[in-house]
Amino acid sequence: MSEIFEFIHKDKSSDARTGKLCLSRGLIETPCFMPVGTQGTVKTLSPGELTESGAQIILGNTYHLYLRPGLEIIAKAGGLHKLISWDKPILTDSGGYQIFSLALLRKITDEGVSFQSHIDGKKIMLTPEEVIRIQQVLGSDIMMPLDECAHYPCAKDHAQQAMERTIAWAKRSKAVNGQWSMVNGKKDNEIRQLLFGIVQGATYDDLRKECAQRIVEIGFEGYAIGGVSVGEPQELMCNIVSVTAPHLPQDKPRYLMGVGMPEDILEAVGLGVDMFDCVIPTRYGRNGTAFTSQGKIIVRNAVYSKDFTSLDPACDCYTCKNFSRAYLRHLFNAEEALGLRLVSLHNIHFYLNLMRQIREAISKDRFLEFKKEFLTKYAH
Image (cartoon, rainbow, N blue to C red; front, side, top):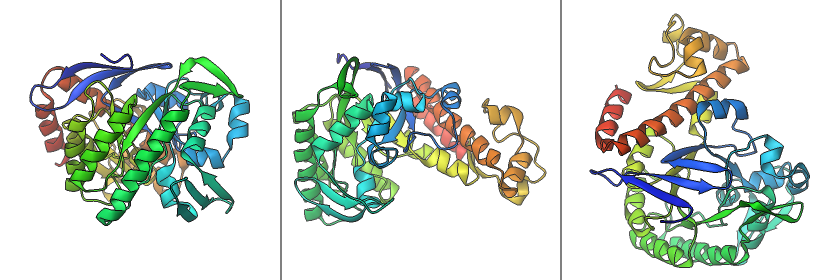
């Protein structure tokens, strides 16, 4: 058994599994969902609300935090956790995806990535080593190395080049990873930082298998499947997971990056994935879309103007216990900030509760039954 990941139980009829990820700031039960706090905040929600909803870990983004508020301020605060008043684990993405999707005048070489900030146009050069150093200052519990995320669709030669660069950068990242958080230039020997490897290869099965095998050979505390949710259809995403997951160690956590629709999470759990993150719960919440056990509800719609039932009768979140669909619709139409906060809070609670239900179903060897029951109601 790995000292970091404890495998607990595998569902008898699928590859779904439960486990515990042992981090310095706490234990995480898997499968888990990580609310996304890109810039040090899960949009519209407080750390207290996240804790009450059952969040075990959140995600921050190296690219955005490096640009704003910047490393000097974060270091002076004593690290990212202290700055944002969150005492549970944080995973920080390397920012590779944001560099490739947001940055201006981007240039990729074997050395690293040079680009202009999308905020002020400042010229920046980030290498794999620098990305690790930044995350050491942030003090995150799980760090992701710089990788090259190929767009969809892309030619195989480009996908292979991005894969080779990702592998080379992974080796360089591991070589400089000190495993201990750095605060004001000093090691915090109580906080161990884990480094995950990332598998790329676009939609090409042979590249995915090769990349997984070579990343595993380097050796990391966990493994991520990257380069998904970049525009590919669901069946291709599922194929990428089904091709890649069998080549990842059983005794290490598996993280599917950026995947967040409930139906996609259920599919990936059944293929053996342990960790998920996505902006969907809060992004949809800010736009007035709620996830419920009966499917998605767009609360702005006129049909809810006199509907005094809760968003989801099966939900016990603060929003559902106190407010009606009619009131939420009014808040959105009146452009009141409370509306998007309440729907975002409900969506986060819905996702975290879904993961609890998934873990319970796996432990009882009825994951496929639960999946079918959930999707039948959800698609109603």
